[in-house]
Length: 153
Image (cartoon, rainbow, N blue to C red; front, side):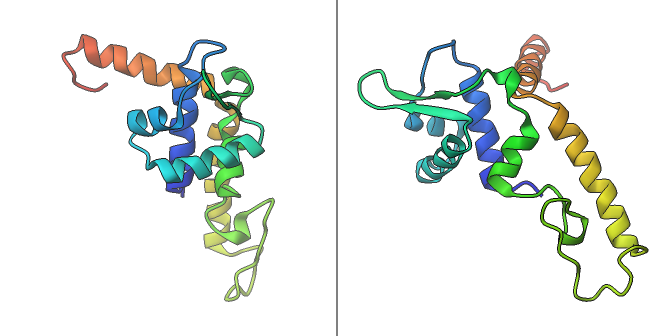
């Protein structure tokens, strides 16, 4: 499951993807625009900076910006950097495998086999979707909604 940290991180990156190249945004501005607690956003942006997704600039005209083009940032990489493995349970994880204490047969466990499918489906979507695609999808939905009198697609 996506945590608030992962969700807020994606929202902050989508906000930054909407900026003109070279433009920065203040953390307080992102927090207000995206309804994210500022203190929590500070920590999230630090993690995103350490992972190479954002850069920060101090002083006048400072703020945060994407460190790479939005079409070079895969959502799976972002979620893994903030939330860890995508698998819903440890025995279905590729990167942090952990067998369940109560499992007698890992190879035939119906829960594990299903959760591997869930992990693969989540991974397929997140690893093939870029930040640019996510931002465009949101912009298109807003434009559609505005043209329909505010009703969603």
